Length: 343
Image (cartoon, rainbow, N blue to C red; front, top):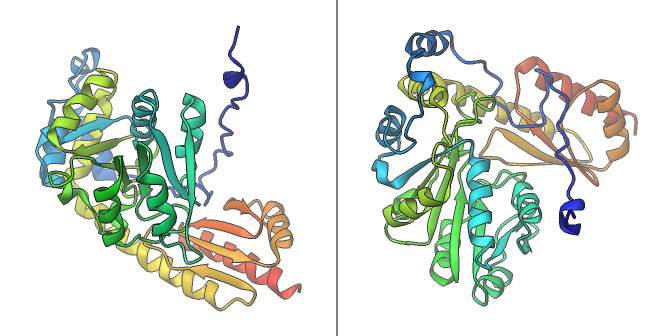
C-alpha cells in the first residue's frame, strides 16, 4: 500500500522549455566557445567508463583554489538542490524541524513535504529583513535545520550579517546559508565555518556560470561535518563530465565575471525603468532577478500570457523577473508600460 503522505505528493510542474524565458533565473549567456572547445578536448573516452571519486579529483583542486578552502571542507553536489534534499533527509530523520523564511526559496518546503519532515515558516518583516523576535522564538526552543538563502529568493535582498551570526550563536541546530547568488552579491559567511561548527554553505554553478543544465553545486563546512556528510550521500553522486566542465569553467572564470558585471548593469537599468512606472513597486536586488508588485495584476498577467512572455507569477500582484538579454528585458518593460496605460 502506498502511504497517504506519498499519495498527496505532486510531481514537479516543469515550465515550458524556451530559450527566451525569464522565470527561472538562468544566465542569459551561452557557454563561451573557448570553454566548450576545451571541454571537448579534455573528455577522455577511457576515463568516462570508470567511476570517479567525488572527494579527490581535479575539480576539487580547482574549487580549493577558487574558494580558498581545503578540499576537506568541500563536498560536491549534483546541483545545490541535491544538497538541500540530502540535508533535509539527514536531519529530518533525526527529528529536526526544517525552518526557513516566508517568502523564500520554495524547495526547502517542497523537499520537506516530500521527505515527511516538519517544516516551519517564519515571516519576514515588511521590508524583507529578519524579524529577530519571531526567529529566535523558533530556533531557541527546538532542534532545527535553518535554511537562509542569502541573498534571498524571491526578494533579492541580503540579510544583515549580525543577525545571521546571532542566529548561529543561539540556534539549537544547524544553519544552512544558501549562497546560490554569491558571485552577484560578493557576500559570504564561508570564512566563519571553523568558528561555528553548525554553519553550512551551499553554492551552485547554475546562475553565474551558465550551467543550469549541467547541475553543478557544492557544500562548504568544517572538516568534521563534511566527513560525516560524505558518509551519508551517494558515493558516486558527481558525474565525471561535470568534474571536467567545472574545472574548465573555473579556468576561464574571468569571462564569466565580465558577464556578471553586464548582468548587474542591465539589472540596474531595468530597475530604474520599472521605478518610473506608476502603480508598480520594484525592489533592489543583489542577484540576477528583480521582484516587483503591480496593482493591475490580472491585466498584466493576462497580457504576459497573450504575448507569451515567461516571467515568474508569484500571485496577488507579485512577479519575479530574471534579467535576460536586452531585447527580452525591453519587451517585458514595453508590455508592463502598455498595461499601465490602459488604466
